[in-house]
Length: 151
Image (tube, rainbow, N blue to C red):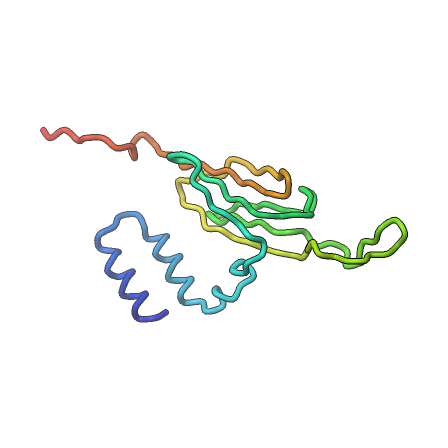
């Protein structure tokens, strides 16, 4: 890890409560140089992260040519993973047995997103070549804004 990133995390730790896991995650990212070269950091497939409401989010991935059987969405330990399933390497052909041009890629991909502890993955839908994964931040009553009465 660089001294600069270490310095930033050390400055933030004393003024935060309960963010240790997040800081540890970022420190591991900076410690592991291979993190920045992993397939999840490539530009394929293109994606958007959209805030759709006060506490709701969508992750949208452009997956033209993929069906829902070609894609796997997995959520575990605050990691949302979207990947294509490996297919037979034989080229698909038209009815006459000839493929003249293959411009739509169905290459293998894997994309990972870190999800906060208080965010719940609600579901996923593939429609018109766009995979939309819906999430919502769940705020317990104790975390909602309120004024504390002084006694």
